[in-house]
Amino acid sequence: MSTELSPTPYNFRSFIIPARHPASRFDYSTTRVCAIIPTFLPSEITLKLVRDLVRWNKDLLVYVVDDCSPEEHIESARLLRRIASVSYHRVILLRTPTNKLKAGALNHALAYIGNTEREQPHVVLTLDDDVVIAETTVETVVSELMRFPHLGAVCSECRVYNKNTNLLTRLQGLEYLGFNAIRLADQGFLRGPLVMHGMLTAFRGSALRAVGGFMEGHLIEDYEVTTRLKALGWSVRSAHNAPAWTVVPETISRLWRQRTRWSYGGITVVAKATSRLSVFQDILGHTVFLSTLLMVAVLYFSQGSGIVPPLIAELIIALSLMQLFIWYSFQLWLMRGYAERDALDWLIRATLVPELAYGYLTTFALLGSYFFHLFSSLKRLVEKGGGSMMRTLFEWGSDVFRVCGYAERSWGNRRKSLI
Image (tube, rainbow, N blue to C red; front, side, top):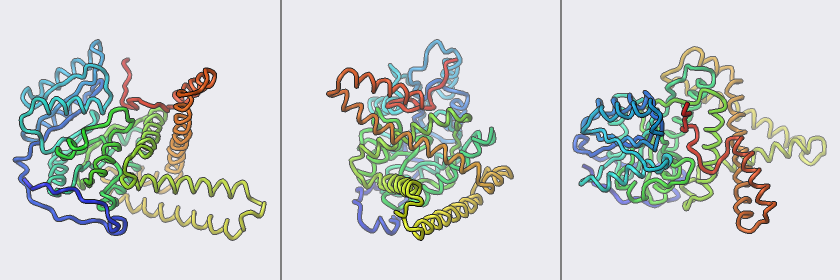
């Protein structure tokens, strides 16, 4: 087992040149690894995930946390019994006393491990309950994590399990290809990628204990815990050739609710982050996005007024077209690394129109999140000292936002129908 090094501080060099760290040797066979899978109304994919984890990873302990699924739901109860029977020695089934949502369910398992295990795990894997893995995925992420003592977490690649269902799932498959590329590009800069995603991430046990586990009450706990790891000096990374497939929303309504949760949750994490450098990429992205919107608004409302010289307007348009060309060329280049691609995926990417329409959908979700964040901030002020009429108006406003998919706390698209 390699010796863990002390986390290193930020420096100016990390803004310009990716940091490089020498790998150390470690013995995978002596590494204590456990996996935590929070679940609410588990599915057959959850059962397959547990079986694959046990079958492909010797000595791995799997903690499945039933987040208080309704006991009268017969199919869920049957699946939980089958999950527990996969291995009575290596699969531990836990149940939360009340519905705690994902972060609470993860902390429930961490508390159980801390109270019952004599030796704490070197690595804690966290997985969504609808993930499919490859035979070498776990060993790859664990090896990547333990070979580099400065790393606090390593995540898998994101892929789409139900990609071929319809046009919407294919678009998400192409989008996830871009997510993977961004994470690889971010490695070494500002302690690594922005988010260690909830699909499948390996956390160094000591780092996760140092940050106190997962913060409850956040819409996207994976982003929030990543910021606290970075704030303590840990770096993070995405493991190459460590695929994990997830089930993505197959309808626009489910996709919308997922993206409103992601976008609003991301804004709240940035707003509450104690270390601005740990969310620098997001701050930069929001700044560029809002600046672009402002520039478009100025051009639109000032056309013909002479406020903006024609040369400046033409230059902005030319730069926008050049940016589109560079982005389009890069997206085509990325297709060479898309293992699941087929002719229809090539057609979707080459024609460009479906991805532009999809981009507008996610952009509107982000715009709504800005408005909801502002609304929520004003609502908290009104609740402290506003009159009854103002409180009633804001309650109505909350109902409207809730119908549109925006909420302060929600399981998001993980809350499944009881029917």
